[in-house]
Length: 78
Image (cartoon, rainbow, N blue to C red):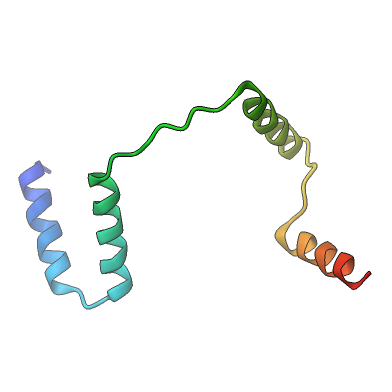
């Protein structure tokens, strides 16, 4: 599909939908595409911490969201 065909099809789909959530998401995606995205430069310390977190996850050292919420609730009761 050519770029022109893709644009036409997208325009037709946008015009025919009443789904506000879908329209908001399309709008958000198009705005992101038009914004200049800043590059984040990480320090060696930050990179090491990210790598450590990834290694923990791969080793199974993590909590599910549900388990983490349970631990937080227990901690708050103390």
